[in-house]
Image (cartoon, rainbow, N blue to C red; front, side, top):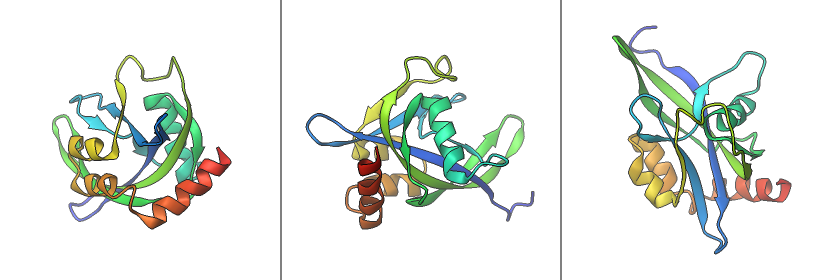
Length: 154
């Protein structure tokens, strides 16, 4: 892959509303550095991108719910590999309205999960465009319409 090439990834943005009606976003720690990230990964053979994002949310955060087939945005980051150069990744983001969190999940021993307000989550992530997306989450009309449909489905 040349420097100009970008690898495509998918991500789920697990969200819910707390008892007071405030939007919360579920974040997990990365396995290598322990920084706060959202569940993401590579596209999967034979799976639609949104379905792959749903699988990542289950494996990385134990989050189960209704996922949108329509993405709410994209962000970029540099995936670092030990002893190798990093790869530029374009991540397509799919909102997931969480119905339940599993007590046990695939990567529970490797990650911590926590609910944050979108504003707090925006401060915690390293990716500037993801941070911007999180900051504008409650004001974005496209996001509002997608999430409204999801909440009805959930």
